[in-house]
Image (cartoon, rainbow, N blue to C red; front, side, top):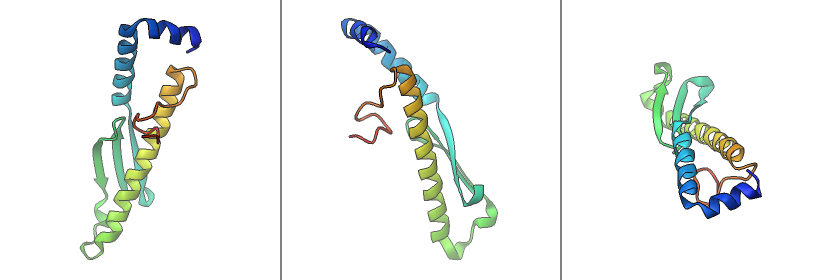
Amino acid sequence: MDFSDIMRLIKDPQAIQAQAEQLRAKTMAIEVTGSSGGGLVRITLNGAFEMRACVIAPEIIDPSDASMLQDLVRAAFNDAASRIREELGREFSMGMGGMGLPPGFPGSGIA
């Protein structure tokens, strides 16, 4: 997206809204899976960082060591979140001509 495209969008609020809706739909369609423990724990997130699935291999469930499982779930979630941030950055960058994620956008790292 070059400067003339940006100026055209500024002059046409409906175009901005349409592009924002399109970006939101793309974001919600993204799904990635993060894993830990060599794939024994897998978490799938969508582009809004909502957990869509959590798969835990039965062989790692040890009632006497819940902290290990908690660590693996946390690590898998963080892996998936990192992958979502990367994917969102790629999608947004392609759609906005190389500009990064806007502040406050999930995964931008800027509140």
